[in-house]
Image 1 (tube, rainbow, N blue to C red):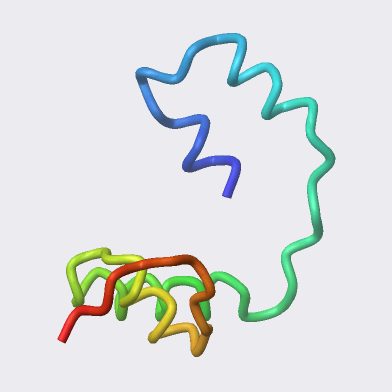
Image 2: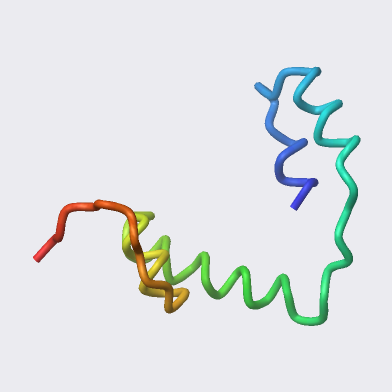
Length: 68
């Protein structure tokens, strides 16, 4: 969400300005809840991109090494 991005105290002013110029998308019903649930699953698995893909039900196509 834009609020989270703009709340970074180290965010350069020009980046903040660019972000504010982007068109905003309407947030659909239950978006925040679904995003929070997905984030919780990923954080529980130490933020690895594989954990995100697994939690979101995505297939990775990038050449990441297998972890077994």
